[in-house]
Length: 65
Image 1 (spheres, helix red, strand yellow):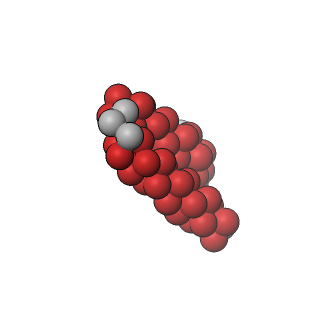
Image 2 (spheres, one colour):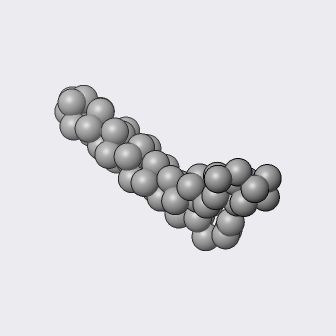
Image 3 (spheres, helix red, strand yellow):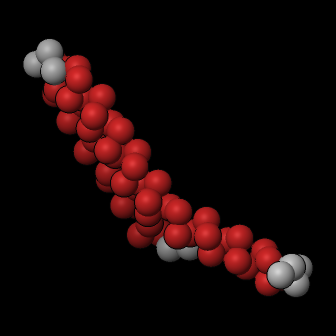
């Protein structure tokens, strides 16, 4: 795992939280919820490949097929 993945996830989290606060201040709570959901989906997509690599490594290590 690379440190760049952690920095990307943190950056997206900060960006989404600022955008969420801005949208809630302007009484657009529905858009704030949608941006939060979009942020979660983006981060999940980034982390999903790392989780897949982890499971493949564990399967190879214990010789599970």
